[in-house]
Image 1 (cartoon, one colour):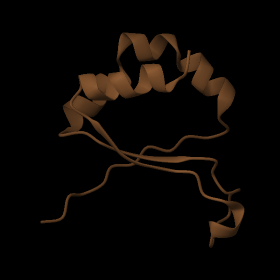
Image 2 (spheres, helix red, strand yellow):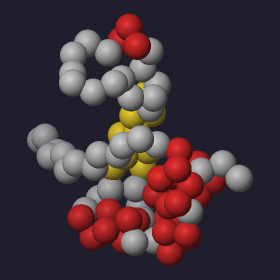
Image 3 (cartoon, one colour):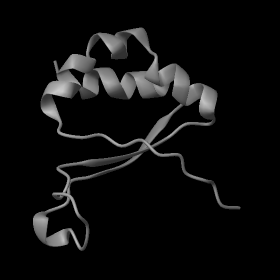
Image 4 (cartoon, helix red, strand yellow):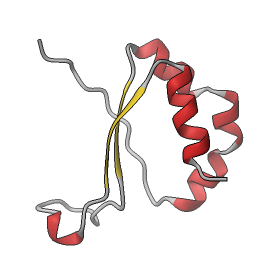
Length: 83
């Protein structure tokens, strides 16, 4: 089972959307104090409640151990929609 088989349907269940998936090469990483990430996912939800529901999704929770075993770090930040 691919993690996308779990993550993408869960995102959709809470009206979210995967806007972009980037797999930058080392020569594309311009500046920073960390190693270049393997992948960057830009996901959007219509509101905080939708994001919280996604994060607490029971099926997603069952598979978090796979995420934890396969990635070094994860960052979630809140963006602001511009007019």
